[in-house]
Length: 166
View (cartoon, rainbow, N blue to C red):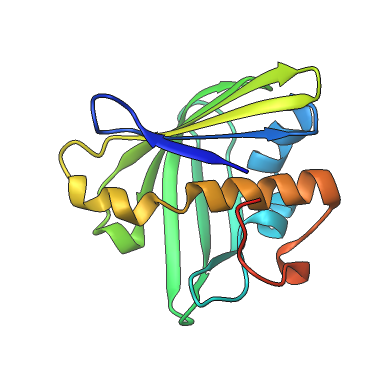
């Protein structure tokens, strides 16, 4: 199960999960358009987003974009720019979501190899100026569970029965 906490300074959400896959596979699942649309989304309970399209120019300064629909069928878009890329250990990019009044934040993925696979540490920062947005990003542990489900069991959004964070 993914864990989640708020950093001591109160402006960064930190989530962690262990995934039984090597860092190279985890990194690929974060940036490969064909893989992202397989894991990013949930069905059931009326609380999910589903990424239907993912595009990326994987280089520092390169842009990325995801688009999809929420549980009510409303379109959403998240865009950003890659800041740091060090495969398969580190991925950092800006994150601007259409549902947060387009306030830019920063997402950092740290992938640490372990005996059983990878410790994935996800940090979402930049919330100091807009603490009211922090709640809209509380779904990261659930999303990390979706990532693990794809990499460990091959489970896709279409096969997922309900939202879980396991």
